[in-house]
Image 1 (tube, rainbow, N blue to C red):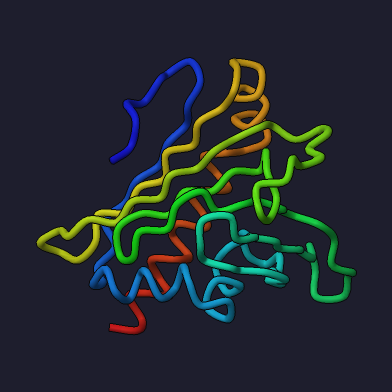
Image 2 (image 1 turned 90 degrees about the vertical axis):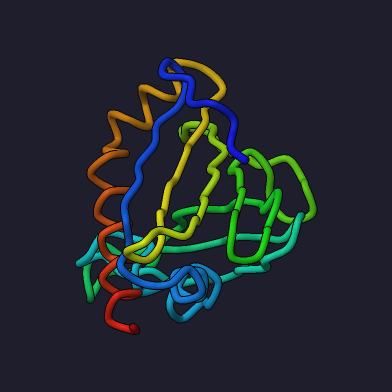
Length: 162
């Protein structure tokens, strides 16, 4: 269960994905599938670690164009992984709950929830921030556009697999 949305500190996005939860879950938990939707196209994603356990690492790099080099995107730690239901991760920690170096990045914890819906899966991402400044920075960096795009890419991938 997610904490209540705090409008001054949190950002969220939700969508009905017309695919079963198991299909959406696999797109989230399989590194090859995850790399296909995690960053807005035409950027590309490389999954370096996707260790789906409490304390496991989530590390991705991205490339803005087909010819450019990959650079760091996200280094995070999974806090909770409840099969087919919830994934919680934070960029304030790295693998095995070690403190992260997040200079210049907004501190966040993301709670991804999957629920059954008559049309498939009710998907939501609730992203919590330490303070209003981090929330506003994340918003100004394009939270709704970026997370909206990748959620649409996730939906397209999952819906093709049904």
